[in-house]
Image (cartoon, rainbow, N blue to C red):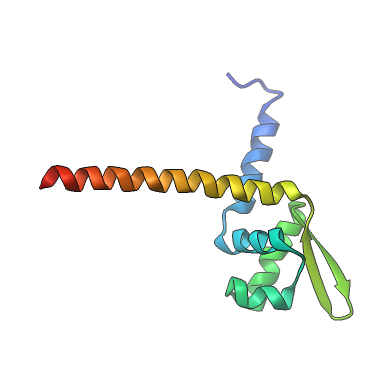
Length: 114
């Protein structure tokens, strides 16, 4: 059973994963895992409107996952920690395994019908 002292940690973890729970934010983090990007570079890659990208960047910034640097009129972003990139790699590995298992199940079901 969870102790009262551990509950805030669970809430913080849940909030952290909620921050990641948007395809555009995941894509931004993937881009920033490669290198620093200006907002103008991310727009075509993420494929959303500028105002929406700004909103998603703001959410990631408030969560402490990215930081921005202004140079004139341009703002460039980087990850605050390489561990964010590591998390994305682990998530991809987990999903690859899940999808492979689902394919095996589907193959097994279709084979049992014939």
